[in-house]
Image (cartoon, rainbow, N blue to C red; front, side, top):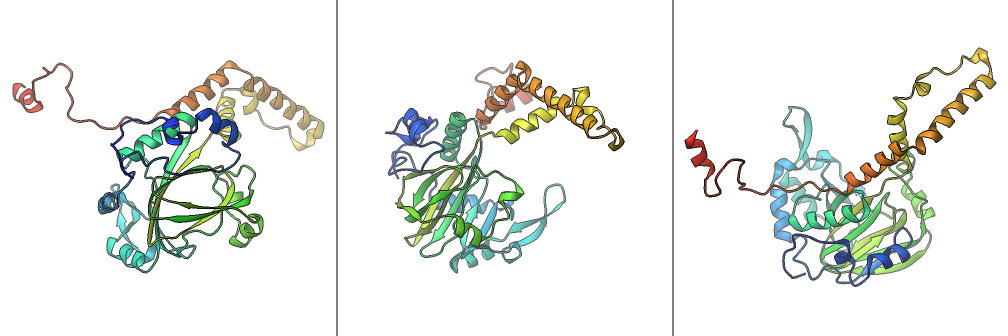
Length: 334
């Protein structure tokens, strides 16, 4: 990938030459989309030396943000981490670079989580997706080696935009799709065998190369394996609000409603008393869902999801300071 560094990006730029309207009508939450070379006009999303430099910042990584996978199974943190206190003195596991590299050299895949703000280019792509979808976002990096598969066939509980950075990777997309899975224990308990029975036949095979973009709707079964010596890609997980988020808003709203704070009828009062009480609760839920107050809360929630924290930009001109005055001069003046 080559091109000029970017400081701002719109969703339309990510999927060009396709328009956002065409994407929404024909692909979003419906079927996968592969756009070869979609990001080739940008500067490298993440170069190998840049990744090595990020990993060298050892104090930002934990066993939660750096994981290793070996032939479809997670490597226990005890094999590549050592105990260390966090800044508050609480125990945690910190990756040991030498142990990580030893496992990687023997074919383990490297997975880095929570990458959304670690480089300028990843940050602008994240912002474009958050702005378009009003969504929570997580960015993970996958570094895999030829003929070594990091994950067995599975589906994700969010929409995925995969950006291929280096090498080549073959993706298998299957015919079946889970029905709107969410982050809940029910969807974490499936075994590899259950996923294999549910995924159906291969519907499409793709090879991703540097600069390619792949969109996968939530729940679509897939797996991938590197077809070159080393392969590097990023996944941008887009988590749109669901009815479960709305129920949490209703729960907060119900705190101020005395009807929801009343006790249930005692069993001795009979089922009709309970039926009447549940009916009053249902009426109040319906009233709350139709209120402008709750509609405003949903709007505000989605607007907040679209926002991305502004990055630090130093130096700055402090309030009351002359444009030519340096911080040290100001301090000397005091």
